[in-house]
Image (tube, rainbow, N blue to C red; front, side):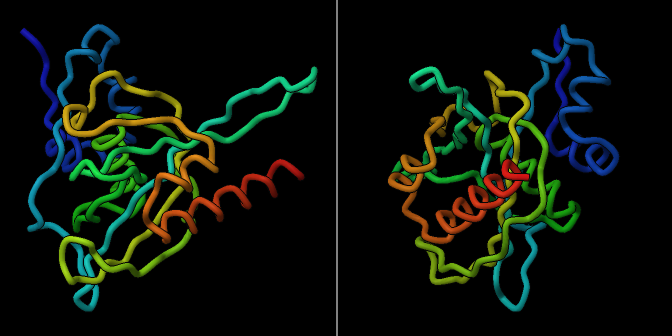
Length: 197
């Protein structure tokens, strides 16, 4: 017998009070954590729109990798990209912001569902308007950095997405979305300013 925690139930009843990693890590013993089943939200009946624009949120999951070049230790940012649903190209996790969650909760949820990572959502990188490739609608996209604390072996979209850790330069090459590349530039600039302080 296993314990199943529906993603919908968790987001409706637990996430307003806890972060998902806190729910999984603190309320459930480690033995039960691996038996939890998180499922992706589906449908658009809870989606937010502003003046006809669908509101979308996402994260740039990142971590630091230590390199050692000629005896000099250096930390380099790596970012996690995922395959697009249609299988063409790589991008950062993103999806619809729903009416029963904050922007940060939606960004965290989408990142867990699509990329299978959890961590700390940091302050917003910005807002972009972009046209959907599948439809002729305009989306309003918000991106956040997410410093990854844990990478899950099983996640809701594991069977339909591939994920890869890449350098910033590699991510810019494989990501077809100009607005996501701009968000990545802002993240890199912000992190380099923090390191200088």
